[in-house]
Image 1 (cartoon, rainbow, N blue to C red):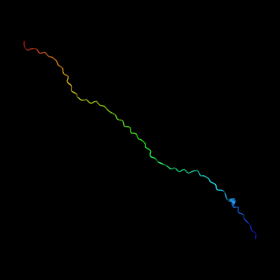
Image 2: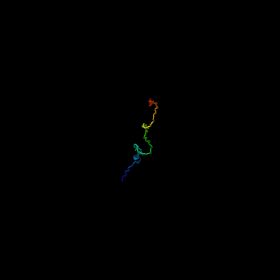
Image 3: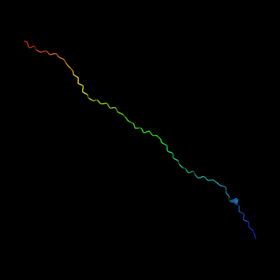
Image 4: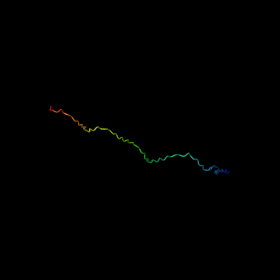
Length: 73
């Protein structure tokens, strides 16, 4: 009986581990913060002046002398 010894070289098949990096997956985390925005509403105030006639009665007096003819002749 012949014995054939098969030698398995286990060391032959063991490869060292290796790392391969994928491009990174980008995950966005959004944060929202209140921002006060002033909304300016301009108001223009216009002062309008109107002349309104108001009657003011004034009297102008003149004095004159008049000579009358005398009735006696």
